[in-house]
Length: 197
Image (cartoon, rainbow, N blue to C red; front, side, top):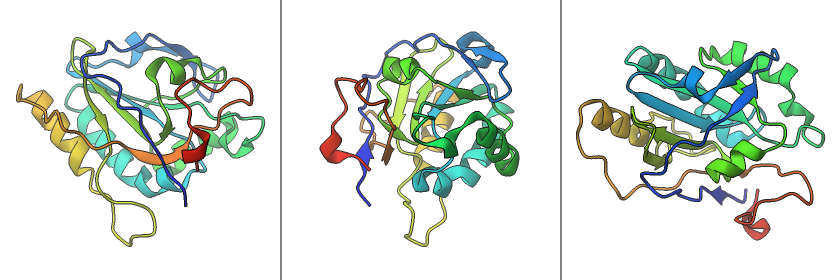
């Protein structure tokens, strides 16, 4: 299984605006998602084995930190025409199956993924209350097929530090997963097909 790593957007970057439909067609914007304490943006999808591996922990973590004032949003940017497993209808089923209580949005044009320099699924971006990037990287060290359940250690540490006004480690490990399935001919400049899953 070949892996793609996140681009590691510079810390301090302001959260790019977005306004996207959820799987029911309701428009959701950045301001709708942000919490009083910050915002976690997750680029994800339904079919990727890396997302399947972390999905239960993502659901638990989201519930825990939504209650602490951190907004959470999931965004699927895959090419639906060529990857129908990531269609809005199946996104709805996946959200219900995993118990996601956060918006799960459809980035059909892939413009939002490009604005965030998202590269893989899952790709995590944590912004503080001022919507400045404080963490981008992996959920934890676990990977599919290792026989180890995810615990969210890395992302949880960043969330806790942010909530307690403590320094977040500047050395952050990139997330890895399947590459975002770009529309042919519209791949971003940072896309490296030789390192894609």
